[in-house]
Image (cartoon, rainbow, N blue to C red; front, side, top):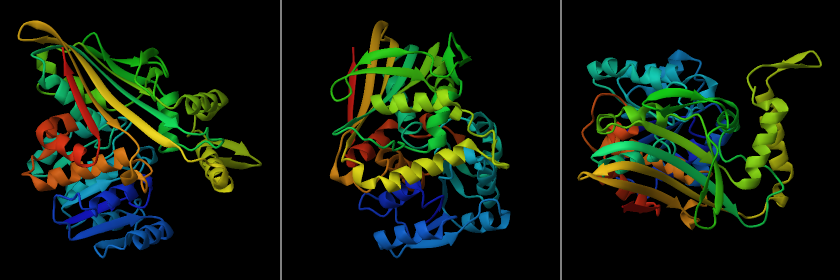
Length: 395
């Protein structure tokens, strides 16, 4: 099987490649087309992994012919190009034209609704697309499916993700993922599902404190723009069970949370609108990215060894067998040597899982969110293979 990976030398793309070439693979991969604009990064990754199946492809996604060539003949196209660069629909359409299965990391939900409206076109063409297949969204959607499957009637499902770092405090701000994504999560309004309909909520609203086990402790959660709330409450087997509320809330490590709040207060939340400096028009995001990258590079020796802990959980309330019922399904990701080469093992491993499950089993043409495509029985064992811990409590 041939896999095309766009943006494959970035943090998430590189992690996906690592998982694809590992002994966890469940499909026979003959070639991985590693496509990126940075030849230096591609070559470094290829040297490190030393897998002959990796083929380097210099790619400028603004070149339609080059994009078409990169995708043509592949069994699946994995799109890791950052959503906020604005190429998601272009790549999505290119996969359809090439009749190649497609997945992306989705994230903020900017294109989710628009992509889902293309379901019939993809179905008619016999092409499968599953959108938003990282950790959140992606794994989180399947967690919600696991909750919904336990309930006959659903009043609400509330979805949360919390990250925490342990060890010496880091004097350097190291983004957990794309800087633009973090800023959007803090600065942009979100769409949530309340009273049976989608409503817009202000940035950093929905403040809620929950007591979690160590190392998270007492966490402050907030609304954040994501794709899960756009799809989960409308999914088959969830909407028809009467759901009236679905929310997604985020908690980043305590001290880092303060830093991102400060950057938004300073005006970096408007990261796309250019400012003029010395007669030159620049985007705040470009400046911030360069400053953060420089700071990390200059202070690499001051960055302490820290361990990252994640907990992804959904709480569903409703009825089972006519009686009130609360279901909690959670996935925890604790430090493990397996994750050491990854920037974000959870996101990249889940994207790899999604791609391989699509290739492993008979495909369903059309455009789907993860909760509408994957089933818990085949998905969760892949998480456990990667040492993610799953728990379910039904009361």
